[in-house]
Each structure stands twice: as C-alpha cells, then as structure tokens.
Amino acid sequence: MRNYSFILTSPSGSEQLYRMGQFPDFEHAFCLAELIAGELGIDPNSQWAGWTMNVQDNEGVLVFSTPVGSGDALGRTDEFETTSQAA
Figure 1 (tube, rainbow, N blue to C red):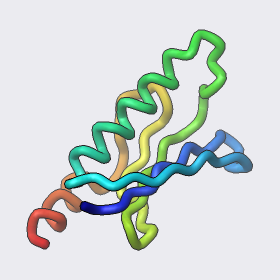
Figure 2 (cartoon, one colour):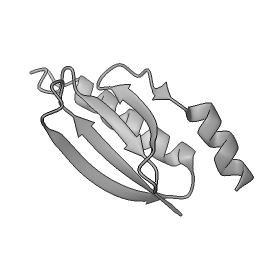
Figure 3 (cartoon, rainbow, N blue to C red):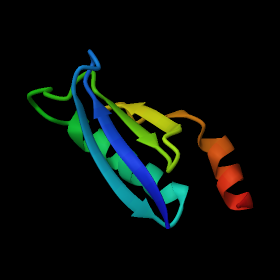
C-alpha cells in the first residue's frame, strides 16, 4: 500500500483541504481524485468553481492535478505508472 495526499486548493491558493489515504496502486488513487473533483464540480451553487484537486505521493511530489469539475487530469500519470510498476 502506498500513501497519497489529496489536496483541494482554492483559486487564490489561500485555502487548502487536506486528506491522506492508502491505496494499492496509483490507478486507485487517480480514480478517487477524479471522482471527488467531478462530484464537487456538479455543485449547483458552484462553491468549488476554480478549485483544483492535487495529489502527492509519499515524498510530497505532485503526481497529478485536475481542476474541479473538468474531468481532465493534468500531470505525470504515464511517467508515474511506469515508475510504480517497475518498483
């Protein structure tokens, strides 16, 4: 199991909501982060508009980032998958 940090960051960067979880592999963490970002994006009050879901690995390295509600993850997903499978 690997630890991943999930960090919701406000548009200004002044607010952050932080959670940590253990997952068997990168794909599980990636799916959860996309699910959370997608669910927050359907808020009818647009409370989360402009926020970003950032995910970091054990060492604090940003693994990927996705804007809330976009469904478009940004980051090193291919590079990380290759690295994690080799380990």
